[in-house]
Image (tube, rainbow, N blue to C red; front, side):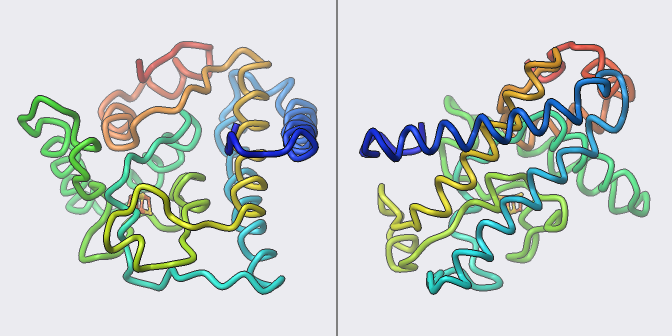
Length: 219
Ligand code: SF4
């Protein structure tokens, strides 16, 4: 659940919304297991979250987020497998020099010597380059959902960042419903740390087909 403080009515509305997303996604995905279309489908999740954010802004929600502001890019970022493959495909379509630079950054990030994982140390995301997201067009749903109503809280790394409940609930319903739909057709839809998962997808040419056959390739 996105928020333990939800009222019973809000909880019921959230679960109903997530189930509507799941049902619609299953209608499309039911015969797509094994097909690359199961990967491209995840665009709907990401576009849907963008629309949730746009709708909130149109209704008067004032986001503190600005281009070049990237405080939230040092938090743990997770993605489900089709999002990981979408990013890996995008990177693989770039010039060889850029592909190799990304792989090197991901390897360095993955191998940082520490008792704790990089994301626990608030290490900047390996896709953050010169203060901008280098995979912005294909960034995962959790990045599209991330926002703040008060940049001062982001600067001080406050434990609670003020957010729009409509954005959080709308985006979480899309995330949950979509992941549930993938599971329902027999595909793994656990959330994985983004950098290490993309490194696997870029390094293993068989990763996509293994996932499409039901394997958990990022465990
Ligand atoms: S993928 Fe992009 S938006 Fe998401 S945390 Fe990394 S740099 Fe930031």
